[in-house]
Length: 61
Image 1 (spheres, rainbow, N blue to C red):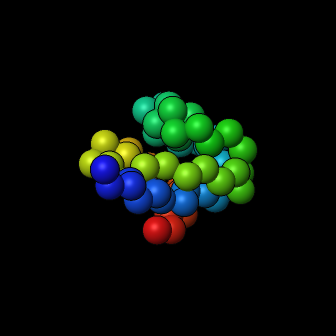
Image 2: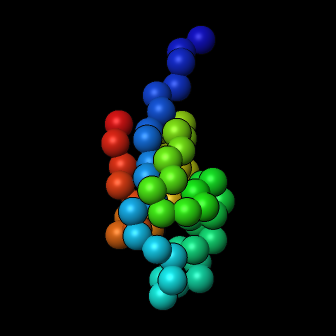
């Protein structure tokens, strides 16, 4: 079985003033505070969430 690639995601901007859907997306990814880092699997659903809230995040592969 192949090992899934992971993506390093960092919250770089505050959620204050952002759209409610974007706040919910960021929270569902597990990000809580500015500069908080999580590792997520590289899946199409994850990529879609990253595209929606890309202005709040920094993504590294």
